[in-house]
Structure formats: C-alpha cells, structure tokens
Length: 398
Image 1: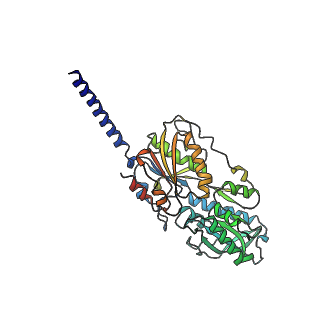
Image 2: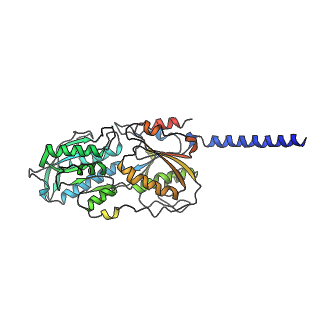
Image 3: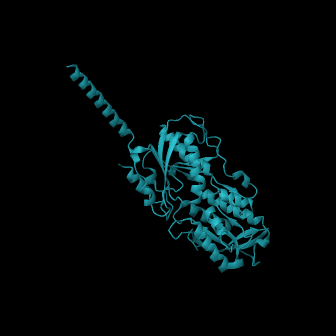
C-alpha cells in the first residue's frame, strides 16, 4: 500500500513537473525570442526600402547598425575638406579637372549605396543614381579655386567567387584604371577600407594620389599615419557591437518599450553600464544607429586599435546563449574589428556567443548553420542578402 501511494505521489510530481516544463517551453518558443539584425539592414536591395514585415517579426525584433546616410555625408565632407586645403597641383595633368575613380562595395547594401550617394553629392557628380557609371560633371573647391570634377569610372568590386566588397577585385580594377587613365586620375575613393587598401596593392598605383576609405580598420589607420591613405570614416565599431549585445541583454532581462534601446545606451542599465558614443533610435525602422566620424592625419591617433569602451564593465547578469551569424568570414571590417569587439563585450554582459560565418555570396552559407535554435536564448543575424531576413524568421517559426 505504501509503495502504491509513493508511486502515485511520484507520478503526480513528475506530471506537475512535465506540465511546468511545457508551460516554460511555451514561453520560450523560438518565434518569441529576442532577434537583432545588425550591419546589414533587412531591405529591398534595389530601392533600399526597409523590410518592415521582417522588422515586425515579433515585439523583440530590432536592427542595430550605423547611420548610413550620415556616413555618406561624413565621407563626402572628408573628401571636400581635403581638396579645399590642397594645392591646385593635386590636378596632376593640370587640365583643370579633378578626375576620380570609385570602388563600390555591394549594389544591394544600404551602407554602400549611401556612401556612393554621399561621395557624388559632395563632388557634384550625383545624377540621381548609385549605379556604376551613372554620374554627371561636378565641381569642387581646390586650394581656393573652383575646379570641374569627373567620375572617370566606378565599379562594384565583386570577386571571382561572387563575394562583394572584394579587395582583390579592387586591386585588379586599380591596376587597369592606372594603365587606362594615367594622369587623369587625381583621386581614388572607396566604399570601404578593404577595397581602398586593395587599390594600394596595385603595383602601378600612382604615387601621391589621394585615396579615401571607410571603416577605420587598424591597417587603414596605420596607412593614414604613414601617409599612404588620405582619410577614412569611423562608424563606431565598438558602439555598434556593444549596442547589438546591449539590446539583446535588455530583451533577455525582460525590458520592453523604450527601455530596450535606452538602458545601457543613453542611460545606465541596472548593472551600471552605459555605451559612451552617441547612438540614435529610429522608431519607424526599429533601428538603433551609431554615428560616424571622419578620420585623417590630424586625428588618426585617436582611433588606434585596442581601445575599448570603458562604459561597459563586467556584470552579474544571468548567463544567456546567443547564436550570431556573420555574412562573410572574409570581410575585412567584420573579421578584424566587429567580431573582436563582440568577443570582448559579450563576456562582460554574460552572453555566451556561438558565431557562425558565411561566404559572403550564398545565403545558404549562413542559413544552413542557423540550426539547433532551441539551444539558444536569442539570435543576432547578419544577412548575406538584405532581402533574405524572412528566410531566418521562417526557421524561427518552429
């Protein structure tokens, strides 16, 4: 009799535990977990329109990145300020025309198109499109004199494997441009540092010709200090990386409403952490964006590698697991700057990151590794193609 009662009690306890587990599982279904897209904003690759169906996937879906339009404007001002302070001899063949070539990163990426637009608008060559070759004659101040500006050629730097933002493609393009245009090239501009450094690798790169990048990668900062690169733009990598993790931390801690994008960002969170650089929240796009800053020989020492945000310190937050995708293992900025920043800040916030990386060309290279989703408390996604966000949310339905 005692055994029967004991067995009944044991069965009841197990039954209660099972019901409790079922209720708990219902609370943490994958479709309800925090989801942050970063760096590559879900959007239409042609129009740039934000994919709000993806961004409204659940109440815990956000985007963390950089203010793309602001970045394009900052790069444009960096270039025009440089030319305004330059002697007219920057016009190498003395024809009164500043000729430049342009390395475009990815035609379907918001950041790339914004940078191309910012460059062309600053130089007066904007003709209503960010497509290669679609430009008009512009003008710019050089050493107190107004000069004509012509975009000699622009090209999307796609590698032989189909990857975008490809530095090797930029090296090949620069070699061809230097041969074809000779002293007509007075300036080289690139949508990122990787392609700019690729241009400098061309054996016939014209000595002394100013060249501008974007990202403030460590090798680019070193090149500015050495006088090889004329300028770049910092997109506040640490703010973006810490911002991505902070939003996830806030969501995992049960925060909602404006607390998600203010705690630890514009004001201290419950652990006393606060990101130092300014970040702006755009409610219509559910996007938290870092600001950009121009970098040149005057201030490049402020952007040397190894500096981290002192506003983020070790916390006693509950440990959580995050699955994070990187669209391209070969991307210079992501691999040399963004991912190391993630690895630095994640342990401080007690976030255990599992990082999977793609090839920069096929969505499947990331999507096929977006698996074992039940093992994670949250997700951070860097899509390969900006219109593929729903491929990931579809996998979270189950």
